[in-house]
Image (cartoon, rainbow over all chains, first blue to last red; front, side, top):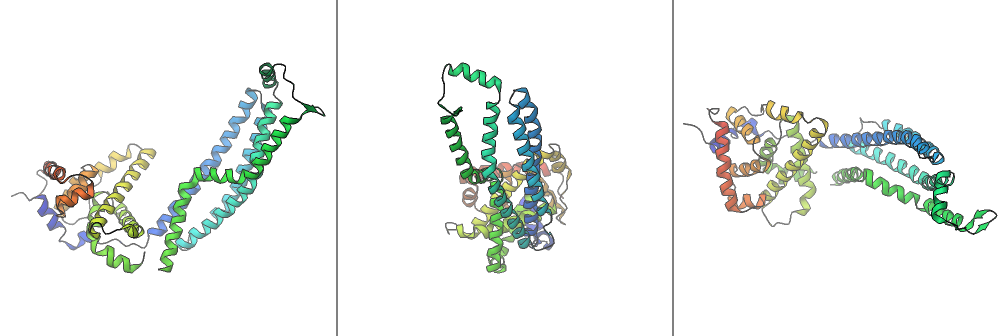
Length: 213
Length: 164
């Protein structure tokens, strides 16, 4: 007579080897290496994407006749990539043979240094991007002609040949970008790597709990 | 995770965790990963246990949810890297985890069911009452009763002639 699935289930699990409990010790090792490898992969992909983007922006800027902006952005993107590739080398130096907790802590230290450097750089990067954009439009004949057509006979107040209110507004924007550059970078970071960084923080916190329990 | 917590609160229920993890994995390595992840999540979420249900019911529910999340994540990764890989592994791999051949075949058949049907039949085979299964799955006991009959018929069809 054919066996019922209930009896197959019961009989099968009566045998000892059907219920061997796996060991738990390797979990954190695997998790920490996996998460950091994932971060490295994402970081490298983003840097490479930035290089590709800079090489797209450059010819496009010439095509749309704002080459000043294109050149400035090209330089900026590549400087960011070079600096961050150097920072990445520090990450490769982290020893994988230490305990998972030490490995994650080393990574966290590296991450904090990396964030601190980028926060400082952001105070210059965002104003630079703004200046690049304004310069691009300022030195573009086509855009000047178009704006002249739109604005008609409008003449801005000039002091020493400079449109003073326009200059003052731009100066305020540049100062604000310099002040808030770090915060904008942190927001950027949260959007791109937020999930991953949260997981790493949780893992470290778990392991710290483990050490105190 | 402290060894005390593991020994007292998880190990007595490791049987069901093992059975659930086996039903959602195709290899020993995956099975061990899923088991470890379930144990870790139980430890992490232990403070969320409010005593509304039995500790064992809570473990069942958590184990199922974690396995379902992991299996979905894995499917997404596979689809991203290689859409063909899913069919090869699901149909090609044999369950070598059990020395009892019939149990191995039953597990193979269970793995062919939908994710939710797998959960239902596992709980049924563990002799959980329909009310408790319904509570874990999030449906009504009547629905579970009908579903179990349908699943058993499907399993019988799959296993037809294969079981000694």
